[in-house]
Image 1 (cartoon, rainbow, N blue to C red):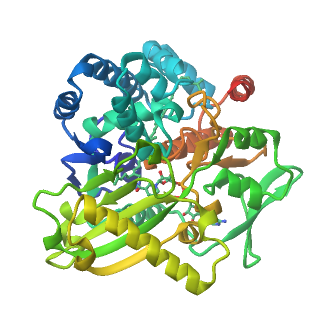
Image 2 (tube, protein in one colour):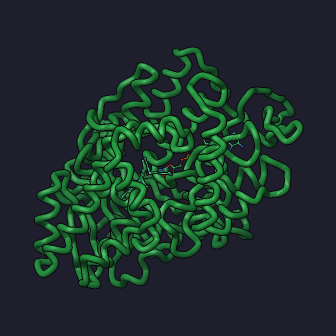
Length: 462
Ligand SMILES: NC(=O)c1ccc[n+]([C@@H]2O[C@H](COP(=O)([O-])OP(=O)(O)OC[C@H]3O[C@@H](n4cnc5c(N)ncnc54)[C@H](O)[C@@H]3O)[C@@H](O)[C@H]2O)c1
Ligand SMILES: CC(C)=CCC/C(C)=C/C=C/C(C)=C/C=C/C(C)=C/C=C/C=C(C)/C=C/C=C(C)/C=C/C=C(\C)CCC=C(C)C
């Protein structure tokens, strides 16, 4: 996980846990990911920035200058981000204060806001294979290539992995939700589980509450939806799609979902020193973004052996996959298809990384895009939004307010997009905007109208 470090302003998981009086023990991952790419290009992203740069330069010595210039630009953006107090960009008093206190940093971010990583990389780098490597760097966090990945998001992940580092919460990532929930309850909140919202209740065009599938209704000053914007406006709000959302759907499509395999294997199948995270694309760069084209693999027991019985490891393997491949099948066909597709992926891993993998399996569970749709309640099981074409960086991404008074959105179909830290930031922004709107923080109605209008107009330019 990103966001677990003890320094800077972008350690948003640490900060969220602290806010509810919690702290988790984490284990530092010595690397972010081990890339296994076409042409036997192998790159390990070390935790220490200098080690990573030296490794990359050793593979592309003729591009040393371009590599340094590209990643230096990422650092300029990351350092600007990391210097700000992160609150709502839809709240003018805060935004103006930040511009006044940190003008250089805010102007840097404003300059890069409409730009994409692939365009910046092409300013400095000519080698096609290296540009494809940067595509893979972006793909693992955005599910699209570098030309479609906003430069601010790319900089955030390409630098924070070295600044804050990747850290594993002892006991597994499920512990994050448990700690947050415990902390919230301790602070006086109430959480209702198995509460399936089917309607946002509107009164005179204002959101005033929610209705559950069991018919119960809850009323509130403010409704915040963590469902995707496709679910919020396609299912929960029964009105005609507002113009703003039409614009969002014009600019963004649902990213595919995932096929995931969770396996328990005998430890002897992994060579000594195996890294925790791997990304595998065997022969052809053109397959990078295709369904089942590339394989993600995490082995959390490399860092935290307590998760599996002695002598065993856990493998979490996943590839992008669309829901359309999995619809219209009988139960039997569905189960058979999961088996066939999973076995092919395991065969590829066996060939590339771990001979004998198939025979070492002691437990295997396969999830399809339908599993994601069902258990995460996400439209088509989508991983999040993906630009329809070439985006203007983050310019078109909506923030938290919506065109329905009293209704706010958070999560990965809001600015700045996919990723736990991105989503946590959208939560922080939303909390601040709501606090201002219900009188818990300062606000200026005149400036609000001006800024929200300006941001709406900017989005139409994207
Ligand atoms: N690091 C990883 O490997 C990893 C894995 C998975 C997801 N992620 C990140 O998490 C991000 C998603 O975060 P998010 O917060 O936007 O979405 P989310 O899907 O994690 O959270 C949405 C929440 O809303 C609930 N919900 C949805 N519809 C509901 C309804 N009708 N009634 C009641 N509850 C409902 C869901 O149960 C869920 O708890 C992704 O973009 C991804 O980057 C990361
Ligand atoms: C007016 C206006 C609007 C403006 C002005 C200017 C300014 C001030 C600006 C500002 C801005 C800001 C603050 C921004 C922010 C941003 C952020 C925070 C961002 C973030 C991001 C993040 C991200 C993207 C992340 C991501 C991640 C991910 C997705 C991850 C994933 C992972 C996975 C999948 C795993 C892998 C594995 C393997 C390889 C195995």
